[in-house]
Amino acid sequence: MWLMVMFDLPTITKEEKREYTRFRKYIISEGFIQLQYSVYAKFLSCRENSKKYYRYIQEVVPPGGHVRLLMVTDKQFGEMVSLYGKRIEEVECEPEQLLLF
Image (cartoon, rainbow, N blue to C red):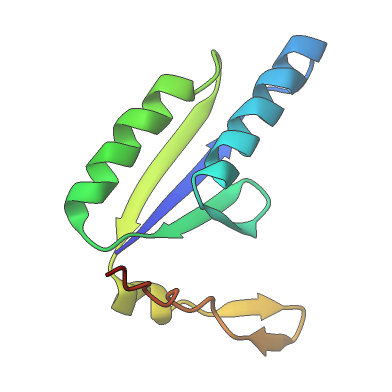
């Protein structure tokens, strides 16, 4: 499963810019990768993990922020097409899992 975070946060005042930076750094620290400006995604092993991130992200959304969370299957994510001008780019791949013994 892939959890996508899409957000629009106000950045008019100095405090709003700080809140934007704090939110962005938080989702990056949680392992989300940037797909586009203000669109991040993270591969999760199961649906239950996404619920955990729903709660975490809900706690750190800045006042006045607009955040959307979308969960898609690996198959759906893999069918995404990325267009850069006229050329087509490969979509991000699912990360390899680590085995701990």
